[in-house]
Length: 124
Image (cartoon, rainbow, N blue to C red; front, side):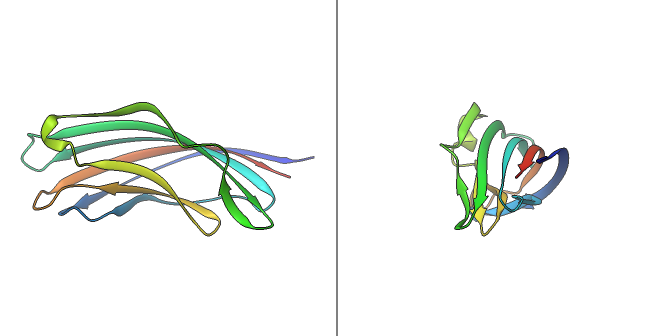
């Protein structure tokens, strides 16, 4: 019987520039399995003038060649943001057999990010 797991995790980070950082930690794709992650992220600037939120979903499988995308990352809710936060972004990335939630703010702007991930896994 295949193993089936569902779990949630949350975390946050503060960015002070247009450099990507990671929140929530790593999402490990089970060996010979598949994981679907749905990530909700909110963010606001330290001066309370700028804000955004986004929901994305992605699936990754871990086969003999390591983790790979299953189809495309899908924006469930396209990033909703103030016009002044137009460069802010959230994405799911693959690193080895893990998925990472990356966030990018803006130059010379302190942004607080918080996110939650819900993961459904199926190990074969």
